[in-house]
Amino acid sequence: MAEALKNKAIKGVGWSFADSILGQGMIFLVGLVLARLLTPEDYGLLAYLTILISVSNSLVDSGFSNALIRKKNAEDIDYNTTFITNLCVSIVVVVLLYFTAPGISLFFERMELISLIRVMSTVLIINSFSLIQKTRLTKNVDFKTQTKASLISSMVSGLIGIGMALYGFGVWCLVGQQLSRQFLDTLFLWIFTKWYPKIQFSMKSFKELFGFGWKLLVSGLINTIWNETYQLVIGKCYTPATLGQYTRAHQFSSISSSNLTSIVQRVSYPILSELQDDRERLKAGYKRVIKVTMLVAFVLMLGLAAIAEPMIVSLIGEQWLPAVPMLQIVCFSMMLYPLHAINLNMLQVQGRSDLFLKLEIIKKIVAVGPLLLGIFVGIYWMLIGSVMTGFFAYYLNARYSGPFLKYSITEQIKDILPSFGVALTMALVVYVISYINISAMWLLLIQITVGALITFVLCELFKLEEYVEIKSIALSMLSKLRK
Image (cartoon, rainbow, N blue to C red; front, side, top):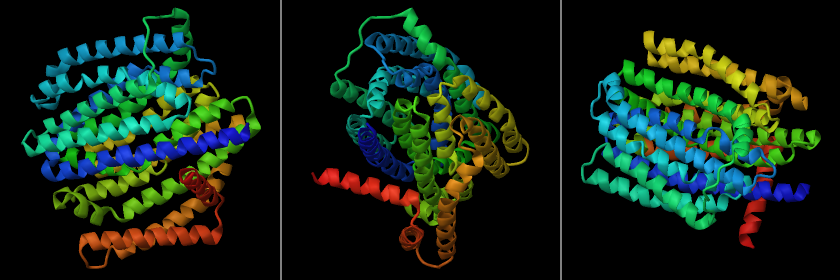
């Protein structure tokens, strides 16, 4: 049983990693091309849309996906009930956005947003048609199928977006890319999974799933709204160009932190849910996930902060230089993001969605401080404040998720400190190299090479358990590929 779970986890991590590297990597590469064809203001306009769509997506899901994954014996009636619920909610939200678009545009003083909001909102209905497919695949730790659909849709939509940009569509090329990617992803998930909904709705199933999921819905809404509030403050108090610079900085950090978090959440939640009745094995799995994840997170985020300037100049040009200090600050904030997610995952595994909600409310009350700094002082003080509140948020998450398994904050910090030490040493050396006066591209290549070598040498020298675990997983994946 333990070996079967380990193999399932390795397979899940492998394909989830492939999904992020291939699918999200393709989106990232397309974004680099588009960033040279478009202006920061174009990306600023897209950011306004992202605020609305992110919040709306949380409403559409309604916490049902996590409830289905956690439910050990989910039946077809549960999936059909959830599908109908998601579809109905998405239609209602799209209609609301259609009629409120003029008011939203007036608030931001950008009237071109009216048509952009009305067109972009249709992505919610498209997404509602793929939520169950993704939930079923995630529950079965099947990320191979999701990777295939994601890769094809990312490639085709990327070509559509670049083509529209070359023909002068401006911000509409970003909308076209997003809509076509979600449509194609949904289409291929339907083809590959061969699960089709039936017109079945059970009030009993709805009440059971919603009973667990509504707290996650409210928590997700609070978290999403708060995350997007940073963009809202920047968009309202500063220029669209400044918002565009911030979104590019955030996207660069997200390609590492958010994708790593997504991999960990998607694989660890269903796996740990299977172990929810065996506390000893659950704690062992929990510790391994934290140690392995944070080694990768620390190295990626501190390394990214160290190479920020030559990377941005080399990849998207000097017009994006104002994003450099923003990216460096955001990296320090995002480096703890995977750790937040793992601890919150544990609350869900325990079935404590009520505590999950309470913690989100407390953290968001505390996070009012940075927003006030952004409104009355400056954008950089807001970002620095978000780093401080991130540490406080980790304390709360770990404080309430740890006792269930007798895994204290002190023990968690002790487990991740060696990884932080390795990453910090590497980042400091790499940052010092940035003072060499050579072209940005050569500087970037030297920094990445030196950073990789230092990390490898230090991990081999100190024989970090988490490094050994990563190497073991990588070798297992390579062995399976050779076969």
